[in-house]
Amino acid sequence: MTVAVVAESLADQTSGDVWTKTCLALRRELGEATFGSWLGQAALRQSGEDVCLVAATGVARDWIRRHAWSRIGELWAQNDPKGRNLNLKSRMEFESQSELDTAMAVKAVARVEVAVEAPPATERTGRQLGLQERFQFDTFVAGPSNEFAFAVARRVANWADGHFNPVLFHGPYGFGKTHLLNAIAWQAMQSAPDKRVVYLTAERFTSTFVKAVQDRQTSAFKAELRNADLLLIDDVQFVAGKQSTQEELFHTLISLIEDGRRVVMTSDRSPADLSEMDARLRSHLQSGLVCGVEPADRVLRLGIIERKLAVLAGAGGFVPSARPEVLQFLADRFTDSVRELEGALNTLVARVGGEIARLSLDEAQAILRPHLSCVEKRVTVDQIQKAVAEHYGLKQADMISERRARVVARPRQAAMWIAKQITTRSLPDIGRRFGGRDHTTVLHAVRRIEALKGEDASLARDLDILLRKLRG
Image: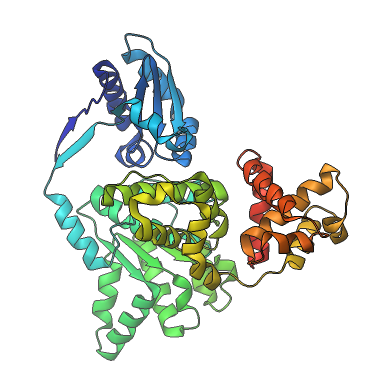
């Protein structure tokens, strides 16, 4: 492999040189995969003597601050003859697009041009395995709910020693398990081209095994799987109840582990909850590393939207931007899965393209109304009042009372905000159901909560919990 690193300087060359040297050291220390995931999309921006590293997303900014900022500061200080301070922000923290346009910019890493013949072979192999090219580590957005799973997956993919065997990622549908499994396969093939990686869904494992039995080719089927250096099986819960398939998977698992080969699987539940699965197979799944992938919280959902916009911008050539209230609406309304969230964003971009920056909240809601009616159960204002009152230790009567104490007023405003988000009621109608209040009172409550939830992490968590509970 020949790698040529080319620094793109769009402003002060000295800043570009300093950052290029810093990045070269960071890439060596962090490794290519980690560097690419968190710093590969960052950019250095300078205005006068003010220099700022701008992370692609808020999630990336937080990771850099926790895991690399101290080291970046040391390297920057060593390489900068002018001794300038370096700040850290996310792209969203810039107040306007004009600020981004007028600030002089230097690309974070200089573009890496790779001339190598191995990737086409890897891509062919990946397609033969049924892997999706978009599911790689550099497109995965990590946060508190999945950061441990992400770290484990990266370790497996790089064939690190001390590997727990087998590894099982479990969690709800649509929150990144298949993405991680695909990313492991792609990275593992790149890291060790001489090793054999096999990726199967549990459904394909079952159908291939059944056909092998019918064709009297079970020996070939067993050899195909048991010669793998890394076996990846997605949605293993689907073999539960299929006795002969479970038996074959159990013996395959034992054979691979005894030979020191690696196995990674995903499931929608932890092994303890797979009651229909064979007890021996369930026990062996529990004997390795069981790693939960939790539903994305609001901060992570916003990070996913930012990353998706950046990807769409690269494909379509428009500047990734949207009004904060539109991004917040998407993050608050589409919580059931990442696929659902990305689908909603795709719908908006397909309809308005680069005009998404000017799309108002009302326009976004109108475009997505068919999706909202499909994905949400009918929730009444009465149910919202009961849920909010219970969450805050109040009585439902407090929701419609005249009490103005903050301990009551803020939950009441939260209930009005939720009613506006997940019901089709108009503002006057919502006001009538909250003790006959005027629609301007409801509008004030909605705007107040909208402003506060971006500043108050505790309130944002409360709203997230309540929305999940009400949507079932």
